[in-house]
Length: 72
Image (cartoon, rainbow, N blue to C red; front, side, top):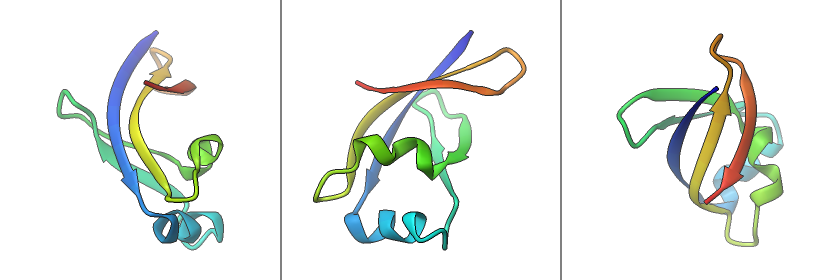
């Protein structure tokens, strides 16, 4: 299984656009320089009153399918 680490900084207003489904994906650059796109719904458990801030490890299969995410 492969993994990447991304640093995310979304304000509450930015995440609300995702929540309202005006925007469906988050696009980020991993620490090793790879561009990754994933559904913003994966970040919902990490939403706080000021938005979503932090580093996240994303695991995915060898075929490139999402497996899990955790906040570091």
